[in-house]
Amino acid sequence: MPLFEDLIENVIQGDEATVKELIDQALKNNVPAKEILHDGLIKAMNIVGEKFKKCEFYLPDVLWAAQAMKAGIEMIQPFFQRSEVAPLAKVVIGTVEGDIHEIGKNLVAMMVGANGFDVIDLGVDVPPEKFVESVKAHGAKICMMSALLTTTMPTMKKIIEALKQAGLEGKVKTMVGGAPVTKQFAIEIGADGYSPDAPGAVDLAKKWMAG
Ligand code: B1M
Image (cartoon, rainbow, N blue to C red; front, side):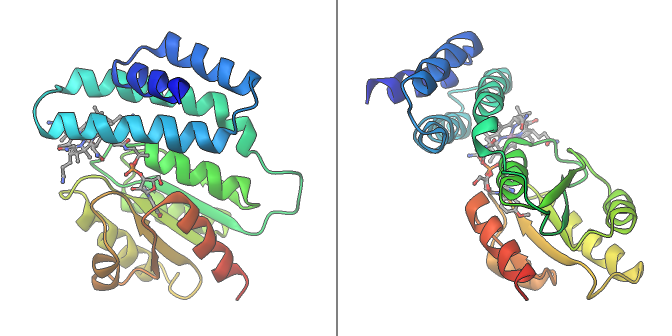
């Protein structure tokens, strides 16, 4: 579909204004927000990642693309808003300390929120003590951690240990995710769960709350 090709190309080029125009046009033509996200925005960012890996793109190019993608996600966010229902449970989410990648974490937060959870988003570069404080303060039932760098993955273990030390073991479920994170890694660090993507994170959180 030419629309998605155009959208992908403009995210890759970091042309935020054109990305917004294309999404506006797509929404007016009743293209589902889910398709805009998966067939346009996420596909584009995967290509950016490949280009970065092959050194065809430098950091500023990635940053422009990420900003265009963020602007696109903000436009489709209202279509993922939940209807007014009693919240299933409080969920604390953040990208771990030392890591400023936020797009995947924002998608998880958006979809978990759209599915009836009350989401407290701590943002990026979040130290273990901030996760602990927030889980305690809000009485959160789930603590979600995102990491995109192999160097920041070990911080997830520190957070899980800090939660245990604060006496929260058994009171809060821990979930980890992000491109380099695997199910095996989740088991090794003692996380309660792992998901490779945002819909999987929603399913797992719902399963936990169903008991
Ligand atoms: Co950086 N970066 N980056 N980057 N960046 C990666 C991650 C990298 C793989 C690129 C590469 O080399 N191919 C590489 C990491 C290598 C590694 O450690 N293995 C890398 C690097 C090296 C770096 C820097 C160190 C570069 C440098 O400075 N030399 C630097 C680090 C900065 C820091 O964090 N301290 C850096 C910086 C940046 C930007 C700031 C320019 C920008 C981020 C902008 C922003 O977020 N506002 C950026 C970007 C955009 C990327 C890539 C290209 C795209 C990431 C992304 O947004 N993907 C990325 C390459 C790649 O991943 N292919 C790369 C789209 C997003 C939808 O996917 O985040 O994976 P993702 O989220 C998915 C799932 O993973 C999952 O659900 C989401 C959607 O379904 N998920 C969860 C995520 N969190 C979850 C939590 C869950 C469950 C599922 O439960 C709790």
